[in-house]
Length: 222
Length: 393
Image 1 (cartoon, rainbow over the protein chains, first blue to last red):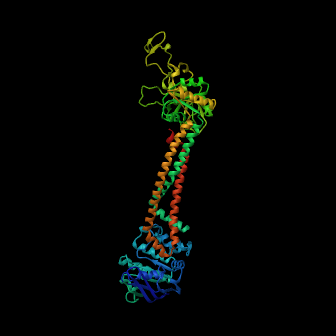
Image 2 (image 1 turned 60 degrees about the horizontal axis):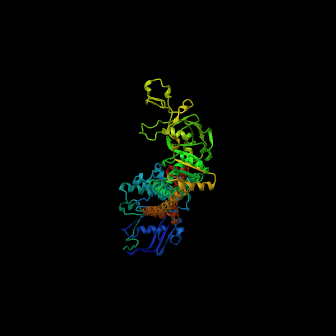
């Protein structure tokens, strides 16, 4: 599914360097990425999604060399194939739950919003237990409801790959488990691959594989 | 684009206080210069059209603008009075037809204009209902007066006291409405026209009362001689003039010194106008003759000088407002960096982000434009009355 080969990235004045000689992630695999702050975990997610480009090496997702696509092609690839879940959800406060879930369809020509998609959004929300909150604004939701809304937004495009950047970061242990359950259930159902950056070591045994950036991937963080 | 508009709409609705503030600011800055232009154009039209059709005005020496404004627009500023002798002087010259004006009194908020029926002919007014006044105590009302006071021919209208505290002053006079003027879109629509003598009755120069020779109660007569009878205050004074008591109305003193506020002088031709003006310039120490058009043009000149100053102020305010709005938008987008970063992460292009911001600005601009346009339409509808209140009355 994802193949990273001889990847090198450096930026900033503090000499940040990320070097990944080889990394393969299989389809439907659930991978946790751990490592100290500044070790390049979030940078890896950005590289995979094509938000930043490496100086060397390549990243392919199901045979598509993401770093060789044009800007527009990368954007279209990202929005149609990759679902993002952010640490603090990053929902838009001026949109209700339904509009937040459908938001990817409103910001690109690559996706077409129609009644079928609206129905899918409702089904997805029902599955995650927020179907009755579609007209509510996000500032009236609990943390768990916000997180489920963010998951719905990531899943609505039925992506092949889900990138979660510390998606359980600010939650209490009970909610962390619930959210992870929801995330796993959703990815299983859509047969998506999950790459999750996390600091929650107590959750690691639930993933198929754990990649420690410092030891396993030969990352040099300065 | 529709999706961008939808998202922008959700944003402006959610942040409605900020949006309303911005819309009000932009509307106000856009409205002011246009409103000023509309009001000045209307004031120019109102002031000049009436002044142009009034060839000459004779009045007491003093502020020529007060004389013109009072005589043409019945403003509250009263010029000094002249006497009826001025009428005789113009008539004797055979150079112009004099139309007297006496605009001292009011009926409610409407001016009572004492004049002659020549005034209607001179202003080319048409009486749509009834007839012109034919005797003292009768009145012809303007179209707006009739509408607002719900008056028809045969109704009555009372003159108002000059001063609420003048308890010893003259009685209000009940005047019968004999005619209603066709709407002219001028100040005449808001005036009550009466014969000159009626205004003198209101002033107390003329009056009507019980016949003192037929008084039955001896206590009513204080003294009596061959030439005069002195009565007590108990004697009944008439506050309404009708056919039954018309003959009892009479004037005291020399009528040639009865007051007027102005005389419209309608010259035979331009030569007569020049001669008449020359005579006033050389002979009259207490009176002046003015060309209303010239006086109004001088006034407009001053107004337009002020307008240029106001335009400059509005321009500076507009620049400051545009900068402030720019600052508001730029601060707003700085605060929304995280949101913009999120949608870029999701796969949105920078051009779509610009489109979203453009849609928000477009919505605010449309609302501001609509509000400004609505306000201008309202202003245009009431421009006549506003100009009258601001520049004339």
